[in-house]
Image 1 (cartoon, rainbow, N blue to C red):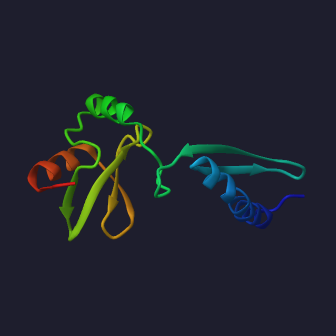
Image 2 (image 1 turned 135 degrees about the vertical axis):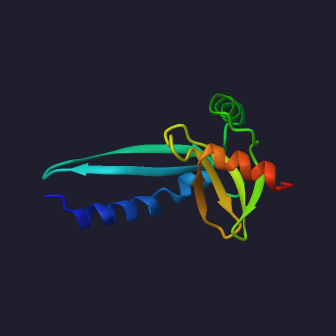
Length: 129
């Protein structure tokens, strides 16, 4: 019988096991939610191309199309300051309808933000990328 602790251990072991594949193919391999019962488990696996720093690559043409569709007036890589942190736009996620703009803070954390807020902040205090 599979247990929650086994699934946690499996996730950790899997991440360790695919490190060489991630390096070889310049990709990030992620397991999503795991569903399990007594005899089997299921999960979604996503493989995403990464850049030389190990960050997921963003399809710039897709970003541009989405930004036009959602009314985002900022570009990929644009930055703004708020609360003493510089936020840099790195992607747009249409699945997050309330907070679709994905940013990387100068504190190393990743944040999500609403379109109107980002438009206002980028126009008010744009920082050169």
